[in-house]
Image (cartoon, rainbow, N blue to C red; front, side, top):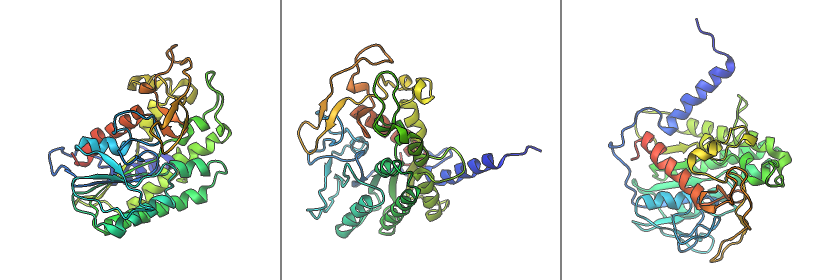
Length: 340
């Protein structure tokens, strides 16, 4: 008889639980595909746009589909615009895409407030698509003191906010797990090209709070998965929550020999996996990103190009990286869940 270690059994259990939310198993792309009536985004810099639909925490370019949320909206022929919910009572009309997201938003406080503001003036429709990107800022702050308590609180608060959406009638809620903060420029150690990030000494905390490699389940990713699975147990009927865990994918597109991934980034069209391409991010403005002076890219021997770089600045991604993540969600997660 084959004996499995406790660690292996825990990982199998976690995988089976995750399948309840991510749609493991061969879902058909032709059975009741989602055709959104409205698209509403909540969250952080991964979904933040201005009134014209331009991403506000990325490299400013003429295209408007430069965030994860707006790229997904563009897939359905919609251009996302900003809802300034702190000063406007936003009523989302049919056939529109609206983002409540803010660059500094946290899963613990801001995103629940965004969802509350939406529900105060709107009722979710059965064909509305909700996109939630949150957790990166919570992890980045908590990693400086290894604050596991705040991370647990953030996962609980976000789960409760998501439940308020589904209790109000939401049927399609995409929740994107946060980035691996340990792979962002502030937490990266020196690799011979750029100086060590300002928070490099806290990199191990950032990774542990981003995702678990053992059985502790103290990371935001594991805690959120566990809480959502408890709130939405697997059934044979439609599951309203699609949890997209792109941690492994993000590790691959940012992977270098310095991060222990043997330069996996090049397989995804990435030429610069870890250098900031902006001097800073300034919002709101018509020129969001001031491009830094190009430096030699150690991986290709040429100067970096933002159109194939991952990071605009710190935790903020380039339009190219946003497209990689959004397209992966649409082509893989939506397909597996039978949403397309």
